[in-house]
Length: 389
Image 1 (cartoon, rainbow, N blue to C red):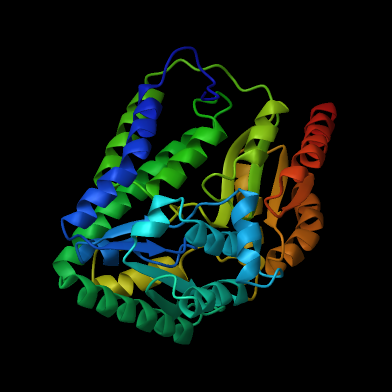
Image 2: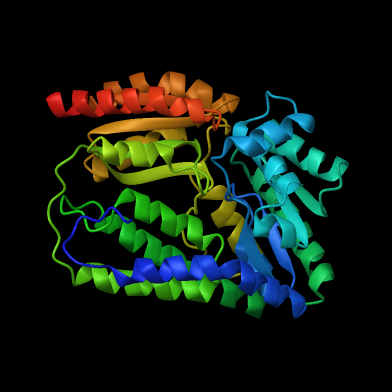
């Protein structure tokens, strides 16, 4: 059941559920017709526009949250690899998730050791064809050229796989389509700045997750319909503390934190994760060379993850969001063994407190069911402290 802040029904979210339920069958049918399906690691560095321009279907492999895949991965990866990456191996081996079974190619942008070792294991155990390319850790002209070289190689690979050239015209068409999706996500997100909440954080995150799985045109129709519903809706002001949810990875299926926040009376009104969610803050330019424009947007202009050097850009962005969305507190949700985020989580609470006076709660997960009790207690206490202050 949707956690809604208005009186009445929102039919678009019901339609979303139907599309999600039917998507696996749609993909299987399209694959049978000869379409190629490109599964990719959802860290925000694989331009979907390249896949679409080659008449292939992009699918973000962003599932997570369950402990069984993590346990299964113990036979393939060392324990000190982060929880989400271990989960990806486990999901592939278990075979229960359709997206992991039908992809013709797995694309892994190598951002840090966790993704590198995931990619190496995927290749070593022959879990499917994989294409890897490197992502630098600094925003320099050399780094931009290196990233551009990587996505050009990706384009060549997908062109060979599909037999379809990603011409400038087709790339620009795909950029225009994806820009529309990003524009709609921004519009809905900005509507959450209001004290009169028209959409729960749980539902917004579900939209972001769905966008990595559903057909692009269908997703745009859903978002356009949702905007119309939200604009014509009478909503009541939210009464609970306004929470910014951030951290390393928020996977499709990992809903425990936001559920606990809402059960405790808090409202997640903005979220920022480097992995698992769609990055929608920046459009791709439609003038000039489209591959250069993709590199500029996906690498040079995007908000940097914690493993970038220097890492201040992400912290400054979170502080900016806290002000713009009238945040009362921040919950930093970290996955175990994602060391760069563990370091940031150690530094960030004091930085945020000094800049804004806001409190931070840091939580670390290994997708273990035994976490729920302690998490519930800590989140309820955090929300009560905010209410009391």
